[in-house]
Image (cartoon, rainbow, N blue to C red; front, top):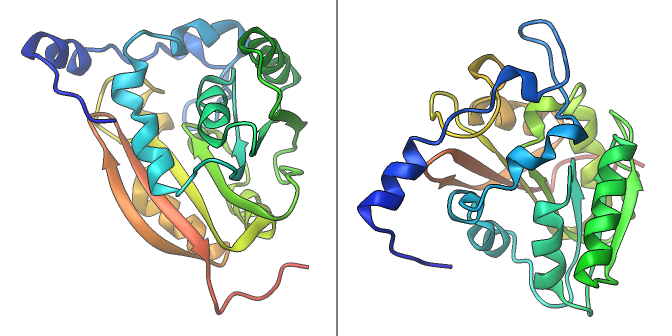
Length: 227
C-alpha cells in the first residue's frame, strides 16, 4: 500500500513516544520482557497502519489468497487479522503466542471480525507447535522478547514448505518511536546471527521505515533435516 503523507503526519510519526517501561512485564535491565495483555491498547494506535506497513511485509513474504501462514508471538492479533484478510477464506492463519491471555484476545477479535480462517495455538519458549507445510511465518515485534530465539527459528524452519519464508520484523535500535526501551531492542545483525545458528539463510533485508527493519529467511539447502 503506497501513500503520500503530509508534513504534519510525518512529524507526528517521528515524534511518536516510545512505549514506557511499565508497558512490559517486569524484568531486570537487559532481560527479556513479555508484553502484557493488559497493555494491548497501546498497540492499537490509529497510525500503526502507517508505520507498521503490513502490506509491504506481506508482499515481501509472498503471502497471497490461499496462503497458509503462521504468526509467532501474535499478541493481541493486530497483524493476525490483516493476514486473515490477505489469505482470504482459501487460506489459513495460525496465530501462536505463549500467553493464554493473548490468545483469548485474538479469539475475541476474530469473532468480532466474523473470520473463520484463524486458528490459535499456545506455544512454548522453544516450540511454536505450528503445523508443517506453511507458506510463510511472520514474527513481528516479538523476536526481542524471545528467551530461545535460535530454538524458535529451528522449530519454525521445520514448519515451512521447502520454498517457504520466515519474516522477522522488529524495532530498529535508536529509531525512537513506538516499541520497547533501547536496552530491549535487537539489531538486524543479531537476528541474522540467530538465523545462521538455526540453519537458515538470509533471502533479503528491507527497512520498514521509520521505526522497524525486516529480515526475510529461508531454508538453507545445506541445512540438515531437523527431524
